[in-house]
Length: 345
Image 1 (cartoon, one colour):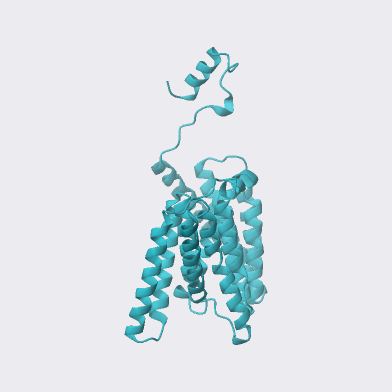
Image 2: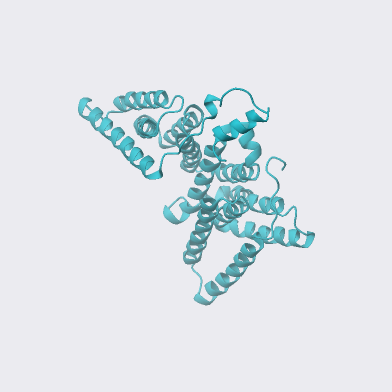
């Protein structure tokens, strides 16, 4: 016996249920992935064609006033299309309009505001998307845009940025208390967790991908910057301590000591701490994209740090050997860490 109607009939014969199968509980057949992919492509093509049409109709589509009007209208239309439970085609079409509207408003803001003000406006608009849009991808993008634009604002002002600290601690708390936050936030938990995680990965990779985005600040702020770097890497030790709650005291102490050593290494290469923390969380939570992505970020950051140093070749080899040994010991110890029960941590 399989299927909800058969199970419901059995329960009704045993006197455990009454009436017919509830309408909202009817079994639904999932759409095949290739059909959803084609619908998604069609939705994005529809949004692109609409933008082309708007560019042909408007007298000057790159005028800042026109961009603001078009961007706000696109965001409103996207919110209306995402109301309820839209089909895949309409959802993807609305998502393309949402991202296009965000980009149009952000570009228009660059024409009116200073650079730091543009980043600040983009961060505020990202917060609006994360709160207002019911689509999970749009919310995830909004959270990521909020953090990354906030980081750009602090960089432009030459201030030490608290964004990596906030992102790292939020990521650790979101995945450690995944069940509890899912109970409190409902469908908003996954976009928040993945948005913070993606922003954290970008911050870790930024030093290797973009010049001037390597978490460096002027010398006057150096002490405060180092404190911020350590605080941003410290969640790795907290995650190791929490996940080793069921391990033997010796194993738990060893895991905490290894994590603290990696925290100090993360002060020089933040991507190492960010990547390893998400890799440990993904492995403990059986989230393959999370631990694979975190491991790739950590390896990328290690490689960037290695080749960026003006050291002699023997010194580089010794540092690489020591770091490789620490990473190997840390990775082998992940399997021995016990994860707390969701919702009871």
